[in-house]
Image 1 (tube, rainbow, N blue to C red):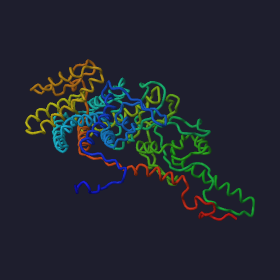
Image 2: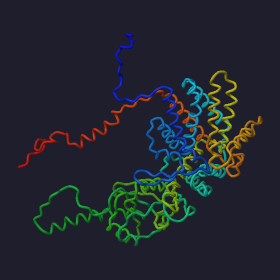
Image 3: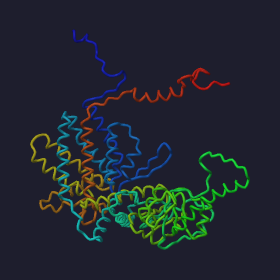
Image 4: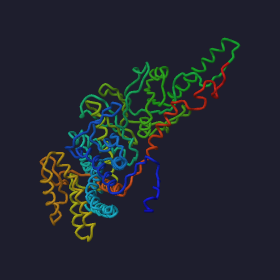
Length: 562
């Protein structure tokens, strides 16, 4: 009786929403499964695209898991973790973003019945981590190295990796064309780590096959003044001067006051301004440069002055383009025109201005240090070119990763089936509950080949049975077999050149397992209603003029009116 009369202890603010225990965990798993279902159909060469229409009215058509996850405005706190792993996969490896979300969703789906049956989540987490380590060891064991090959062989191997990535994208129809372009671009920048050394310029019009690669730098013709058309538009081995100063007449920034006693002195002050600009231009010409590029404006006077002396100039060049010219041509960007020596100027074999579609491009090719490349993309609709750019970014990242970590594994769901078989075999050697958990992890890995079949319209059960039978062969010859997208059967992925860098798979399995374990380890969500409304109240009070002297006229701290 005494215990019934005890007052209730209030720990949290009134209105705080707390949900905990098994129900909370199951709700988080359901939210993550729902997110995985959104990107499920985009997997593989026959994956569908998503059209995302945001509140600003802009439309994005994409097949890239990371792009879709970013554009979905997910508010569920647990499901946001899947968005983060898709982003991390994109920035770390570039490809496999849909895979990583699907795997995390599937791991959780497999864990759900165990959680509902009362298994402690920590037991699941321990088994999943063990399975993850085993899977990664197996990938490293199966992976084939491409080290020690000649450049030509390496190029064709890298092109195969790029083609595998591009096959699931919108530009998959021209994957061979773009794969070789991407490989050439990545090899051109060599060991350069900065991705922005590969520029991608988009020009609407024409078809995809009109896209081309410049071994150097290309950028759109900048805004130009009168006299520009009189300048030469092609040079062989010119000296290139890169500036970060304005070459135009401009009024003094400081408010200086000059008192004149004689009107003729006024002319000398006006002349001084002209002399300053002419002196700058004269020094540019004397340096022997044939091309002058500046990040700031080059005015009409300077444009005409350079045109009379057969020098090409372009002002307001974008900073990243100027930096790429500096890296490729071997020059240094100058902030003054005094004392320009040959060492700070760049050069290239050919400079020309070319018409591409309805745009004009300045193209620097045959650069000596050659640590840069530019891909000029053509295509019909703007959305199409945007998606092509995202696809090429994935392919570029993959080729860079394959160059650095030079091991590849068979794609098309082959590696997933092989790890699944290996884990099932291993599970049999374990006594206790973890046998079941590792088995469920192994089953979850089969989602990749299953989804590839579903998206292509094949009978997934039939294909998976064939794959299981092939992978179970004792000789191990079935290891590289994956889904054959063209016939709806199974095929040797290695022989069909469906390859992907092993780092993609390792990263995907690692990230997906981490995410699944993180979500399984959360058993309570505390949501404070005040924290959401606090921002709204702050904005309202600012609008309501509750500040000092806001309500009463004349009581503020301002100056009194006279």
